[in-house]
Image: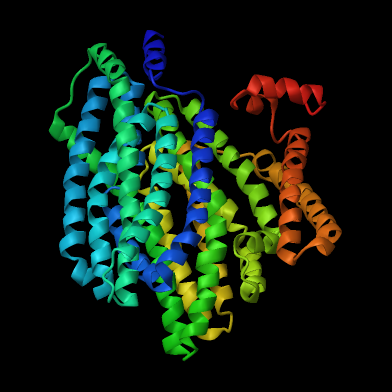
Length: 559
């Protein structure tokens, strides 16, 4: 009994910011803000550096992303898992040593990645993208340190610092990308060619990425120093055995590696799909390169970009639940581990299902709002509507990946992602070879890939946790509520669109109609969800200001 009390007491980190719903909510809001900033600044930046400069930036950024994933992108999640299991049983000294080992790992791997980008740029990218990639090089090193510090706070179940740093990073990235691009282009010699100016603009944009990481690192370092005394005081209460740095470093590498491989497979899928699609249609079927590339761009740069906005919320939730579930699992409380796992899946579905339905019924309005290119609007809208269901599969798959990693089954997400990659690659090649589906084959295998991960992860959780999910409570009630919401949103949109269509152009009418439709959809969805019991009073009380919200809903006779 005393041991259980000790575990419960020790699991409460001094910087903890509240329940998993609060922590996940904080990260989710930050993620949405970051996405919006990213969408807003890309248009003016492209106007400054041009399509050619954007091409050089994109070529360099793709290589930068691959090296980042292989070096330090997975550090926050891996470190939070490694440390939280030790914090759960009061091993604060070992948790601090795990942080030190993670820092050493990030310094070594980050330095190797930076050197590879700088000195290998000539091999990794074409001539004009070389200086752009070299500007990216130091960012790999800095991001590793930033990831380690973010992981430290996440292990203590405090997501506020990470959330604020992400917003600061994106704000600095946006501002400095635009400013540096303008300055470098204006400082070009008078006789500089358009290509030379484009390269300079791309270099300025790359500077923004590094500057954003520096800004976030300064903030996170200041936050760490602020809480340092509390960390040291907590370490002083630890009288347990101390592990050697060698043993902790070994376990740190064993924890980080599956995270890296899993993320690498996820990103490899996108690259592999692109290669197969373009090669089989352009080289194999001798179709127009311009036409094939344009249609693929509608899929990857419009439909997928929109899909990734709600999915990013699940990614934020997964970062919050890893230390939360790892703590319960390390404490040996299987019942609590199951409860937290189911709640995390429900949380993801409560958000993902209405987003999927909304993107289906309002596919054309949403696409027009974000990408108002009339000549490709219809096809882009259809691609979005057909792919919207992946929001559900990807969101739940992301959460179940995090649960498996939190309970120490870190190789299982690799198995599910690897199996999905093999199957969807074979199916894509078959469809492109023997059918005329074209870009619709890409949509189909995207849904298939996400569905396979979704299904396999659920099977793994049944096996390792004995997890049983109530399909009516977790799936059916959100789907029913979202269906009612979708009908209401579509009706409001059509009504307002017809009402205002005589006062301006189609874009104005769409803008005036789609926002009220969304504002109506949200309360309709939650009203039906609460009335059907899909979202209970206990769920509401777990939210930020849950008491006040519950009282308000009771006055409105929703509860």
